[in-house]
Image 1: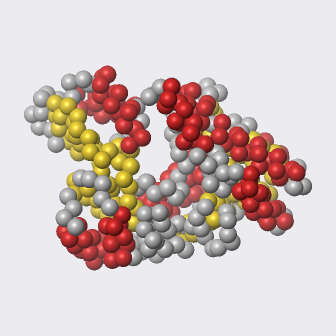
Image 2: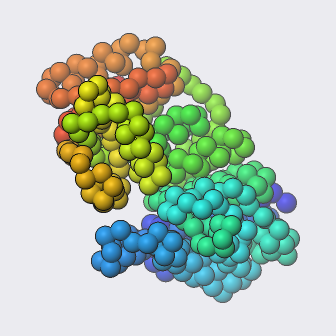
Image 3: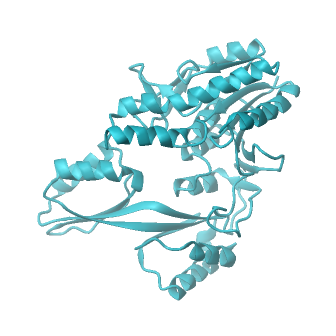
Length: 392
């Protein structure tokens, strides 16, 4: 029997009505005599609400305890779906991340899956059950609960597909595939039929809330075809695999959830710089685009996700009180497509729009598959739409 992995996001399992839609989707695969593993996210905005509750108690919650709290949302989803499927005559069993044998490293909130012991899953599948697994979570060597980062249920699903040698991994959500840009930011977005793993990874890395970046890495490493589809219709989705059609723009990501940080001090030494940077790594701040302009005085700049700001501010206040810091809310626009570096027309048209709108650039990064530009302020969705019209 063929094994398939189906992942259902928070919007797909948001309430009991939508859980029934999910059950019907699973039923269609069950009728085709498939072995089914379904991975579920927390319902609706449950994770956001749990984070908000934790933050009301502490601006920097204990990371181990936060993982224990955040893992609860997916457990509610898996149990409810299993109850429903059993009532509908489809034998199902729910498993937490640790019951499913998902082992991670010791990092909290952004753990990496190191191995999966699939013996329990395979036992249940061989008994004819649909196995429902809580996404986003695992267990470390200390037997502590860990979570994989926002969107981590995608990675749970693809990693399970790789380990179980599933034929496909379907990622179901409330949109019917990957679009040329975020349809919530502009109405001109178009659905993409196929993407290479490399292109999809760039899209995810740049902040598009489509697929978890690590799930794409796992898919590429183990050759797992990923199909992004809608739970609520039967439209063809977007297939992510190793096929590359290069030379043109596939996607534009506008990311406003970034903080630009500029740190200075009257004293500079290589030892001091290394101490500061190592502390950023240890605190897992997600520092990117770091530029060290220091000579006689310390002068470094970088970007971090806005969600890491409290952690950074706390670190600087307690460990480096002598540093002066300046922060800016910025936008990063990323134009993605294999081979676009050799297409001068893409860069020329982009620079024309930047000139017409008098936009102020902090930095620009160009490689084989991406042009990424950081601006000194939050720019409007109108500019995203203009770029889309000219480039796609």
